[in-house]
Structures are given as structure tokens and as C-alpha cells.
Length: 478
Image 1 (cartoon, one colour):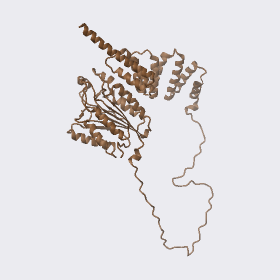
Image 2 (spheres, helix red, strand yellow):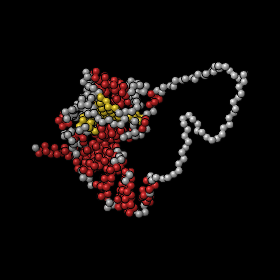
Image 3 (spheres, helix red, strand yellow):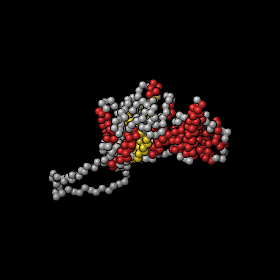
Image 4 (spheres, one colour):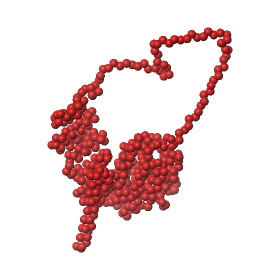
């Protein structure tokens, strides 16, 4: 019995040491300014069921700071708030960074509260008090609260009486002219001509007298020669001319290698790999990841969002494809990473990746004109032990429509899709076939997919789409 206890202790200690090294690696990546790598590694640490949880508070803090450095302010604020909940010691600065996150997200009321919380703690440091007052003043100004903005600047000026920047800002806010005061000016009303009518002027125009008609110049019933205009039909632009210069970015994920507890899937990696190859032939810049952990999915999602922001707003398209286990819980759909170990209901939101919040919302805030999300992720319930907790329905739920989004599901909400008997799942198999036909709109492609999947599944699997798109999209231009 003693030997067994010692062996068990050694196993636990070894696992804990390995997880601590994972935490250390994440911190090193942050210090090396590899912020994507830090997010991936710290996320892997935080999703390990066996770890020394006393490091969680710092892991959330540094992961939040990495997201802040990358401009992902919504995610940064969530992680920083989690570090506060775990009693991080750097309370004042964390409130300050949360305030900056809210300000960047234009959540000005929340920003004021966070700046005020930071000020209560950090005002013993006069330099920090000065900075927070000037930053909070800027938020008040954006909200149109001039008196509060002025009060903060006056308090800042009391700390640094010779600061010219604050003096200038205070003068601008205090000057009525800077607040769009009415200014009386003489205006001159221009003479506007009616359409196709010249503007009348007072200049005299010399007119020539009409020639005197003589018998030689009079023609009875003249027959004018009318020159028929040459009508040319304009050439219809090709799809390549219309859409050939648009930037296309895709993040494609396939998860198959789950634990036996969750259930290994046969086809998702094949589906993702084959789908990615087809997209590359259609001029997509494709990132493919397979059998991905939570940390890997999170880091690649942030890189994907950054790519979408590189393109022009009217000429950029983003596509997210996922094949693997998925589930719905409390009105959110989740991707199940291969390292997920779910024992209790509240583990789902911690260890699974939210699609509405972390995929669709990130794409919606980017520069892309159209966001395509394709989910072949409703194979079965991966956590049968939690069947009662997560509800009677299986598969994924219908998501809220987002701006410029086309959301496609392998099957209708609450239903289960087939994993397929060949190399690919039935849905992805038919999708690759339909999208490979040139000159077809995205709506035409998915209508064909639905018809073929319904027929081949004996009406058991009914693909589903939600659309809020404006304009057209063609997978294959020629």
C-alpha cells in the first residue's frame, strides 16, 4: 500500500512539474514579445486538469496582457478580470489596463468606472494619478461630459502646474468656440442652375441677325438626313475582373484525435485537409491546423483576425471552417479541443472554444466585407455523462446573425450529422463538390449541398444556413 501511495505521489508531482514548466514557457514567450505563442502556451497550461492552480492568477494576467499587446481588448479585459477574481496583487494597474480595454472598445461608462477604481488605489503615486486623470478626462470628453473632463484636467494640472499639454487641453475645453458655439457669419447664396440649364449672367451677348430668306434658299418639305447613332453593347465584366483582386483568408480546423472518453472521429482531419487544398486553388490564404488544443485554436484565431484587418474593407473575405466535435451550452456553441477534459458542467465554458463569442464576433469586428463560418461539428454528444446538464438537444444551436455573415451548419439546429463512411464526412464531401463548380454564388452552392446531403442521408441530415450578407460571393471564379 505504501509503495502505491509513493508511486501515485510521484506521478502527480511529475505532472505538476511539467505543467509548471508550461507556465514558465508561456511567461518566457511573453517576455520575448512572442504574444501569440504566450497565449497558446498559457492557454494550454490553464486547460490542464492536473496543474498547480496557484499559478492560474498569473497565467490569466499574462495571457490578458498578451491579448492587450495584440489589440484584442475584449479578450484581454476578460482575462484581466479573471486575475482580479483570483486575488492578483497588482490590483490598481489591472483596473487601469481594463479601463484602457473598455476605452478602446468604446465602452465609455465601463471605462470611467475602471479608471476610477484604478485611481482609488494608485493616487499615492502622483505620476500615475496624473496619467489616470488625463486619460479619464479624455473619456469624459468623448462622452460629451465637458465639466467632468475639465475637472480632471484641473486636478492633473495641480499635480504638474507647468505641463503645457494639459494647459492646452484645458484651454480648448474651456473655450466656448471649441464647443461648437454659434458663430454669426455672412453667407453668400450661390446661384444654382437647374439641370441642363446654363446659369444666367448679365453679360451682353452679341447676336447675329437672321439671314434674309430668298427663293433660292427656301426648300419646300425638306427631308433631313438623320445619322443613326452606332449602339454598342458594353462588355459584361467577368467574375475574375469583378472579384479577382479581393483578399481571401481562411482558418481551417479539423479535430479527430480525441480521447476515448470523448470519442475518436474518423474524418475531420481529412475533411479539413481536403477543404484547405480546395480553398488554396481558389486564391485563399489558408491556415490549416489539425488536432488542435485550446491554446492553439485561440492563438491562431487571433492571427486570423489580424490578417482580416490587413485587407481593404470592401475587398476582403474571411472564412472559418471547423470539423470535429461540437456542442451547445447555455445559448453558446463550442468547438471541442482535443485536450478538453470535461468532468463538470462549468468545465465546458473554460475548456471548450466559444464560436459566437470568439470566432464570429472577432470576424465581425474585422475589415472583411463577408464572413463565412462553416461548421461540420455536430457528430454526437461528446460528453454523454453530462447529457442531463447540457440539455436534451444534441448538436449545435442556431447562432445570432452577425453583420455580413454567412453561417452554414452540417445539419439543422439540434440534430446530428454523419461522420461518413469514406474519406470525408457526407457534408464536407458534398460541399467540396459543389463549391468546385465555377460561376456559382454562395447561395447556389449551399442549396446544392443541402439537396445532395438530404438525398444521400435518406432525409435524416438537413444542412442549415443563416445569412446576413450583402453582395455576392463566388468560391470558384472560372
